Amino acid sequence: MSAPSDYWPRTRRLTAVLLIAWALLTVLPVYYARELSFEVLGWPLAFWLASQGQLLGFCALVIFYACRMRRLDHQAPPPP
Image (cartoon, one colour):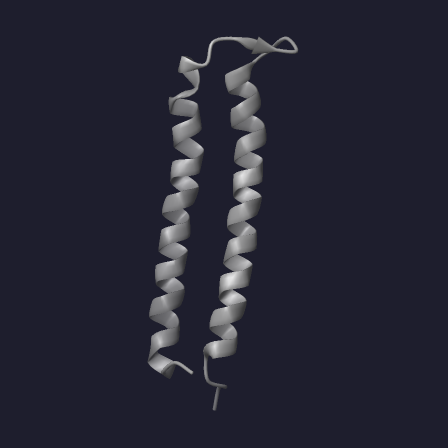
């Protein structure tokens, strides 16, 4: 069990790290998309990777956050 005062700093740190990951996942595929110049099924490959890959990445971030918060909630002492 962790100390009661340890719960919120760990929650804020997790949220900050995942917000940075979300921002990178949003910006980096779009920034590097110009390097992919060929087409798949009439659409530029960059469009396909950015649209589908980002959706999967966002879902992975939400699942990771839910699992990690469940673990933090179980480690926290019960409220008074």
